[in-house]
Image (cartoon, rainbow, N blue to C red; front, side, top):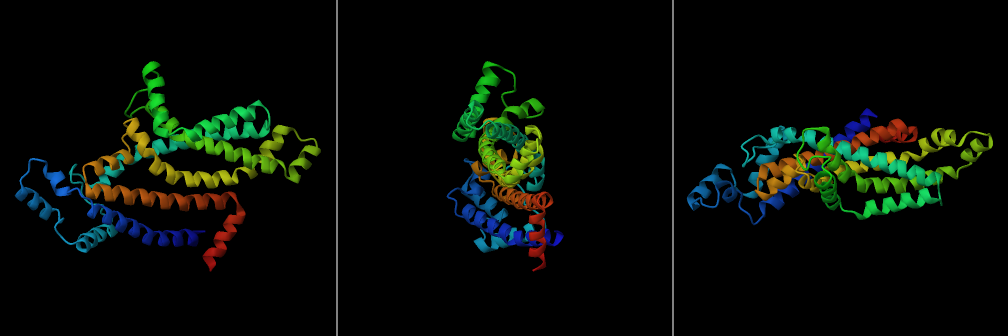
Length: 313
């Protein structure tokens, strides 16, 4: 397993370098001038030229990228033009808020999605099934930012239970987490229902029922452990989606996460901060993929044996 993890980490290096190169190309050919944005609209042409030279923006593309890549390989993500703070320090200051929002969104989608999916599978064809699938349809069809606005209006303004924006207390997290997780809850509900129905049709489930086992015991001991395997896989795929998808939620709720900071960096053409947030989030996606492989290997011995055989090749 360790050899498999090391190999995955080594394979991630060219991926991250490729992402940095693509991002650098897009920023390099932007029509906006970072030096002009930094100097301000009233700065003279000489001042802008001097700032461009000090920032190294007057160098050819490959010179700029090579210098950035050299710093990146030493763990230096650069220095923000606008905030005059190291990019690493800025990202780490926002990281707890983004992780809290991701954790809250995952909790909401698992709690609602699995509950609705299990209830729909057990009550297949009855009112519970119809209501559960209606909830799933509404969740899939509702954009997160629009749901966030509705939640703010309903539970922040009309019924002021939760704060309208910002962070700092657990109450601040409730509405953003619900807005971020509701769409995923709908997918989980549908997948959990389908997975449980497949498992319920197996012979060993019918055998357990034939031996007189209670229905609750059959579901808990025989159905759920086997039905959760695809859910674990989907949870791992959700983490990258959350890392990129919470940007709109952070903007709606004024949540001080990495996504909102990245949008602000794009608006001000803060090149080091844009590059830093993109590369950092890409690294988070890669690491989350490796972690979910490890968790799957611990849960399912077949996957662990496949990883061991893959590492021995």
